[in-house]
Image (cartoon, rainbow, N blue to C red; front, top):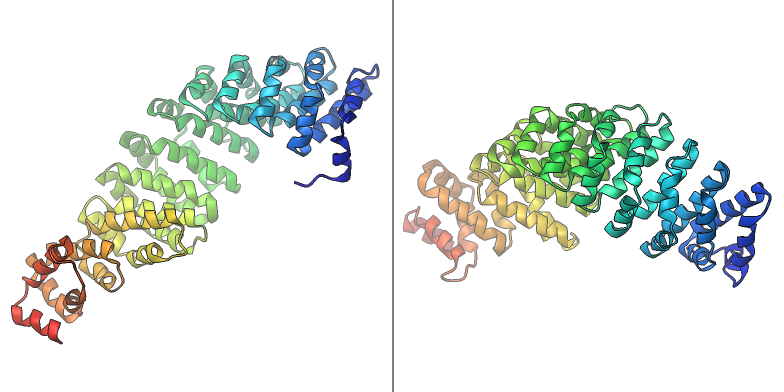
Length: 465
């Protein structure tokens, strides 16, 4: 970010020193205005935030924070938030001057605006890393934040939920601290709150708790969030949809039992509807959730198939512009199709294999997309015995994919006379003769097995033709 002329001026030596005495002015309005000005400067960029720290202004603010009126407290907390948001180093400066303890005291203030400003500052400090988050916990913030989410003011609820989310995200231990303070039950009660911004933060906090372990995910589920959370997937707010799907994904990924619970609650069908009703990154957690559910077992994968999950995943693969969303869709399709020939056929008949192959071979595809499409193809091809879906791939597939395709023909053709006849009439057998395989390779073995299914003169005739 480029600095304006005024901002550049304020970075000159001594300018912060001129502002600092105003924080001690006898007129309260001047104190508040000085603090607000410092907050706006620190908020502008990290250079100005660093100048506030180097100007030795933070100890002054922290020292007077607990003694002043509510207007000053809000302005001072804003300065701490503005400084702390830029980097872990600047946030650490707030910790070192005793800022956390003072902010925690502000969480007990009578004025909701002061509580809100303090919670906001604590969240900006906690979000950087687990060490800073632990410092916020050690200062005693969590029980007071849980009390804040029970206050009537919506704005305070939002910020407190957001800060609990920022604390929980770093480690299972930090998430457990939030759980031990009784946060889950209060957060779960707010899933149906009409305020979209509050719902976003509530769903995010529950996601950050559930993601770490089976035990934490089960505690979230035990708060009876199902089927209530499924209503969020139909919300008019895109972020509520996305965070709702993320919460379901973080629960589904852990165990088959948790995934089955989601299936039983109608969660798979609801996520499939959600994917169909939105575009872009909002789809991503839903796509991944379907992949996680399908990965656990044959039955759960079949639940995705029966709920008509394959067509929307194919749509995401073909119509999304971002490679990381396509990669997620490819991965999910691979998880659905990897279990049995029946599962693989369900994916293959959607005519998605040529799309996966072309994305894998496209030099413009990201490395991640190429890896995911290759893996999905391999997963599906190794189980697929539905030959009409495989035959078109014989003409375009590179050797590393071709061996899996030819391998499936070598398994099916010896036992299926109708398929053998079709393979000749469609030109498949001729195509196999054109494949250049290394002598003694697995691919050559597969070709030999296929050729042995036919009279020698037919095979020889195709080679010489």
